[in-house]
Image (tube, rainbow, N blue to C red; front, top):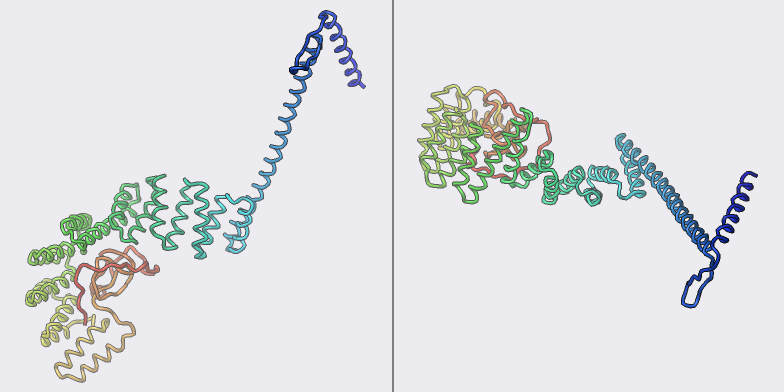
Length: 466
């Protein structure tokens, strides 16, 4: 009732005001709305009409604004509900995956992506699941899609690099890691991954450059020692490649750099010896190797000298070198075995028999020892003893290879190399370590699965076995 009375009052007041101002402003005005259209209006009528039009326009504007606001609220509410549904599906998917319900997790992530195809974290999780199932192509597709959505997301690029590496697309994986380093040049994870891939692809110069950068980072002391060892190995490999490609002067610098990092790094010493041999400076190479042996007492140096002297037709020199080493360490069973083996190679039957028959300890561990002794007994016409030695050799269920074994992974091999073919460790191949009371301490767990076989041919000549 109050509204009705108020409305009647306002209308009456409006009519009164209109009449009052119309009496004060008599006459008419001509309003042209077109070439042949015109209207005669009083001034007050024109003003009132203008106000009415303005009010209508304001009402329309307010109405449209309210309509847009309502539509926006409806859309926002709809998007929020969709986001909540996608969030719920993603959470359920992660929970299912953590609970090892992988197939259920895949279905939940796929439902989430069906609603929101650009959900980055769902793309990441689903791609990782596919990679764990060796479905590398699908993992790559999902992570590439996530990368297109957010091309500066480092986590996405890291996962994509893992996919590509698992699919053996190593060059593409390197490109993904390079993108990370453009965004974040000091990203340690990307640097390490790129370093490891460079080593896998034998891009030793790139690996060495990255290794220098890694050592400038703040690393714990234990990690720093391991990275320094890896730096030494990379320097050696760069030198080895340069030597193989016919650049001995450049190779020499890298070998010396490796020795400066680690005075016990045998492969670099042998590398320098090989350079001298290629340059025709065999005597100088021999002198250097003798000095290295005097410093390290590493029998592998004697193996290299043995090959050198035999190639030169100077067996007496290597015999004298072995004898001098035995004079300094007369109870060294390793040196005794290798000198006896040398005598056997040179057909010096009596000398070989005299020294090998006096060795204590290793004969129960090496099939090759019994094979040598059997041959020696045969040449001496001692048939019964030869048969005994052959029977001992046949009792070995596992053939112990002479002469090298890796202290990191126990891989046995007949050829010396600067790097183990199985586990990739440098300077880890030793000669008959069991004669010295067991394998040396290694930084790698021997029970860990072997890495990819390293396609590396050693610099030193292979040691001839029986």
